Every structure is written in structure tokens, then in C-alpha cells.
Amino acid sequence: MSYLNASSVGLVYASDAQNALQLQTNSTTAISIDTLQNITISSSTASTNSAQGALTVAGGVGVGGNLNIAGNLTTSGNITAGTITQNGQPVNTTMLLYALAL
Image 1 (cartoon, rainbow, N blue to C red):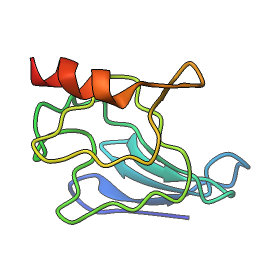
Image 2: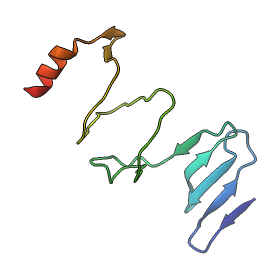
Image 3: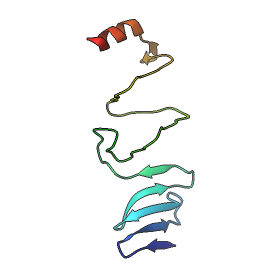
Image 4: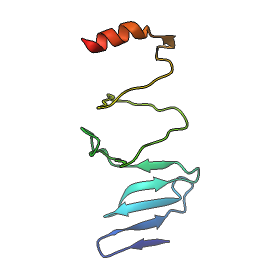
């Protein structure tokens, strides 16, 4: 089943086991939700600030599990952490804060 409007934007129900629902633009899948409720955003738009990127969120983001970042982490606010580790070993936060202040 699918619905595409005159601008070739619409929803497509995929009968394969991989993608249960797809949002397409011009026959290209932009967002897919698989049968395990995993969401994939196909855009590779880079982010240079909080208003740009493949996914932007106006409010806060809550993450109940791990967060893996392949690129750099940039913040204009504070970072609060329980324990900072590198390669599984605790980092001396006094030295880290001194290095960040330089």
C-alpha cells in the first residue's frame, strides 16, 4: 500500500521484513521504521550548529541507553557527567578541567 501526492511525497508500506513503513520523497526513502521499531533517517546533512543537520530537535532529548557519536561533540552549554572514562578507565577530572581551561 502506498500514498504519493502530486509532489511525489508520501508514505509507503513495504511488505518486506526490513522496512515496515517508509516516508519517501521523489521515490527516495527519507525515513524508515522497521518491524522492530528502529527508525532510520537517510539524510547525511552535516551539523554545524543546533539548527542544522539530518535531525534537529527544538526541545530536549532524553536517551535511555547508550549514545554513540562518530564525530565531534560541541556544546554551547555545560557538560554534566557522573564518571568520565577513556578506554574503560576513569579520567582524572581535575587534570581534564585544567586542560579545558587552557
